[in-house]
Amino acid sequence: MVEYLRVEKEQEPEVREVLWDEFRRAFRADFKQGQHVSIFGPTESGKTTVGIEVLDCRDYVLFLATKNEDDLIAGLSKRGYRISENLEIESRDGRPYPPRIVFWPRPPDKNMELAAISRHQAEEMDKAITYAYHAGNWCVFCDEVVWLHNDLKLTKHLNHLWYHGRSSGISVVGCAQRPVTVPRAMRSSPHHIFIFQTNDKDDLYSLGDISGGTNIATVRETVPTLRNHEFLYIGTRTGVLLRSKVDL
Image (cartoon, rainbow, N blue to C red; front, side, top):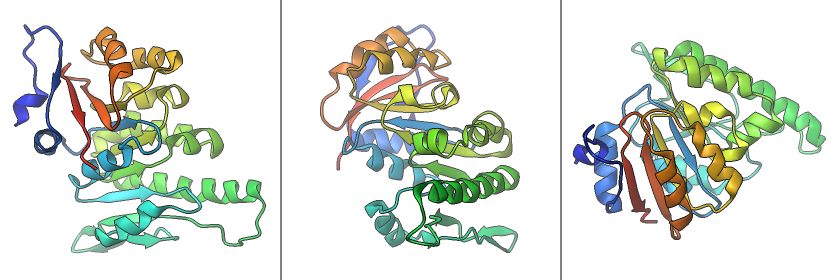
């Protein structure tokens, strides 16, 4: 199935349609630790389903949760993740434990002002990202990159992971609703990009930052035509373009 994620140099870039199950098997075989993934799509597009599928490929996952309430967290608990408000990671037999953790720094006081809540979150996320950067070999999942970027002002921290983490075996899996609202590194650094439907001209223009052998013209033509729960997969290093539909 890996051949889906390969394209011969002599081939003209084209968008191939594949079934979700076929794509999943191919992606699992191809996605390596140290590679970054970016997922763009509106609420209820299928973005979360793709994100969980990506995380299931990795052994050590640090999930950065920023929402006040999040139904996704309960589902992760059932999948073996430890939910923690404190970043408590031990070493057992030379390996980090727990291997899958949701770091969810809730406000210590429910009556805290919003500005104080943001400062608290920023401080705690700073610690988590710094830990991952120095420890290496983690898959760091950022469910709300825009919040980390714009509101918590952690762009430099994220850039360290995107630009320098790869040499330490760090994978960043970032999610956002729109590609135009995120740091440029989220569009230019990943090996793997998933985009759900958008007609917004600014979003489509921002896709020009995608690096590698990607045919940007084809990407811009295809994304507006995607239907509900469909996505365009871009292999930025291979130039491969695949169209599939998430099975929710």
